[in-house]
Length: 469
Ligand SMILES: [Zn+2]
Image 1 (cartoon, rainbow, N blue to C red):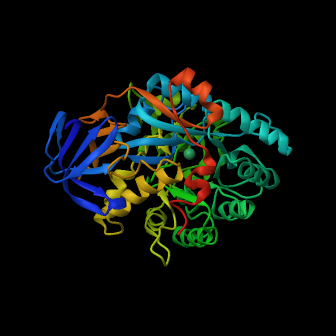
Image 2 (cartoon, rainbow, N blue to C red; image 1 turned 90 degrees about the vertical axis):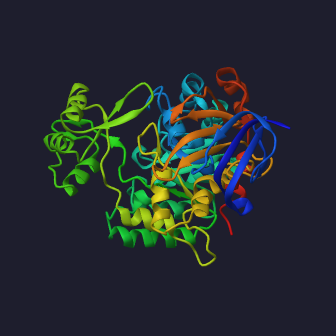
Image 3 (cartoon, rainbow, N blue to C red; image 1 turned 30 degrees about the vertical axis):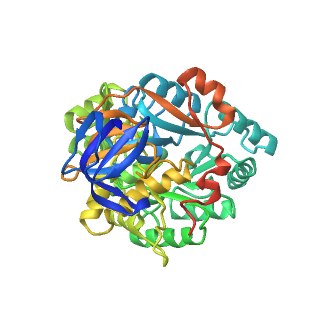
């Protein structure tokens, strides 16, 4: 037998098949066809990976890769982080499909679109108005919708949109909070109440545990208890210390009120001058786009970019406490299952694609083992997205994998769909294969080529596969 690719001599970690051993892995036609020590057979391409980990490609169900976020760079940033499948959690669907066609590096991508009052539907929408908004998003290639605290939905509208999504069988994600609860532990509590028995993706659980109301560790414990009481809900958290927010100022103060509080907590004035000093001293950082990366600048360089843009840049602030990130990343219920089901990044074009880096650090601390990391970063999210051939490395699996240097905690080689998309740390793939519903086939195929059709009703998001005990 002649293989397309033979990945030779790495430590293959695949909890789905109980495998953690030095082995070779052979690929033909985009599938894993053999795994085991010292495979026989010739290969068109042999990749020697002795000393490295061979993990399933990461499935990151919370990224931002629409055309206005790091244009030309976001897909490469994902590949460099070992991600082979991603869910954009804002859209627009049209913009993600367009950018994927233009600057894709060979990954699989799905998108849910953030719905905004008076844009997608009225502030107090009727059920038919909600359904009409869903239909448009699905036709543009999306698999569902996202709610966001900053968009100003009230509790009634939030509950109605979640419920209608469940009745209609589309995906629904929430950055928790409404007009009557913030993006904090009370917002999480309210969103879960509004969801009731309905399914929902709770975005970045750690971001509601920043110590705004109780201490960060108390909030993490409350979040775990809330999630245990809603076992049908899918939850993800990220491991980065920084957030991503707006650096825009008007009349001498940040326009996002939360930025004011974050600056004050860091010991800076909650003003434009305070933000300038925070950038200068390295507390706040300013993203700078290169041809294939988004780099965070501080000091004079950071201030210069921010001022040249008239403050209209993003900024990142170190506001996610380590204790809640670690507790939510490692917490398990009495059956040994993770309370927060998956690692995601809220990254993509936002430079915090650190699941491997920080997840391997958690392994070093003894908080997780390698199989746990693969379960949370690869296998569970693959099942939740309804792609059972991903997130593992058994015979017949999609040939999506990351070869990871254990010491630098970074991938050297990434293979997606049986093609090398990252070589020596450089993204070399092209195009994007979209994961969409049958309603989006026509549009996606025209703009980005053949995709993978899913029905959210059949994914773990609704069936509970990967989530429920
Ligand atoms: Zn996000």
